[in-house]
Amino acid sequence: MASQIGLKVQAVMSFHQCGGNVGDSCTIPLPRWVVEEMEKEPNLAYTDQWGRRNYEYVSLGCDDLSLLKGRTPVQCYADFMRSFRDRFAAMLGSTTVEIQVGMGPAGELRYPSYPELDGTWKFPGIGAFQCYDRFMLASLRASAISAGHPEWGHGGPSDAAGYNSWPEDAPFFRHDGAGWHSPYGDFFLSWYSGLLLQHGDKVLSAAAAVFHGTGTKISVKVAGIHWHYGTRSHAAELTAGYYNTYFRNGYMPIAEMIGRHGAVLNFTCVEMKNSEHPTDAMCRPEELVTQVATGGGRLA
Image 1 (cartoon, rainbow, N blue to C red):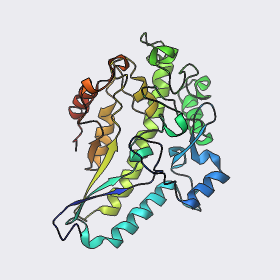
Image 2 (tube, rainbow, N blue to C red):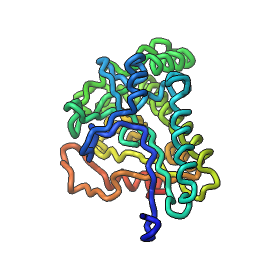
Image 3 (cartoon, one colour):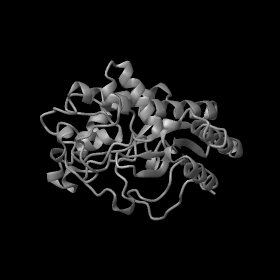
């Protein structure tokens, strides 16, 4: 039908649960066979420091592990995209001109740090780190040992407060930088954001291989986390996996990774104005968009 009336299509490869995020009007869980595997091995789910599991998207800590009926999650994503390519080959490059590749909750390249489902998080809370499944903890321990600080490998910051806290409520995120801007803070945030970048690179590599030569462009959705952007720590961005602070441009590495694959960065708050949001939450969507737009990313 789109072809008949001259419309172009952006096809979204969704690998996440629908429900529990901004704009979700229905609930569609992950495929039953994936949920069954997560029930057998709960560590397939992202986990916070209180042991709360998040079933929106399979944890990136499992990317290279054959835990989904003999396949890795990335292999499953690639198989799905390959099936889509083969089924709709005649439309690729003509009617279907863009493939947006899901990378996490809400289809975005991020951790599920601010889940609205069941009221766990409410705007403008800072969210919580999602690194407590056993696979991510094993990676953290190995990285800490490699850095010469095994004591840093037991989990995320113990003083990062909770989902609905504000930056100054949490010693780790306070203005003075004693937590997030310390050697330990830099180690942890580099590891946490680095795993997210690696995940994006793996899934994009699979997508680029599948859709090579089809005439379609590939895109990635990055979340516009604009609340508390006006603070030094940018706490809400940090818990989501974007190591962006007063002293560090966290979007440049993301843009560079996406650019290496010739993909486009889709940003979610391009249309927002500062005046539309509460001033006490230091919301700065306009400044955030400017940073991302000038940081090497091609916005769409």
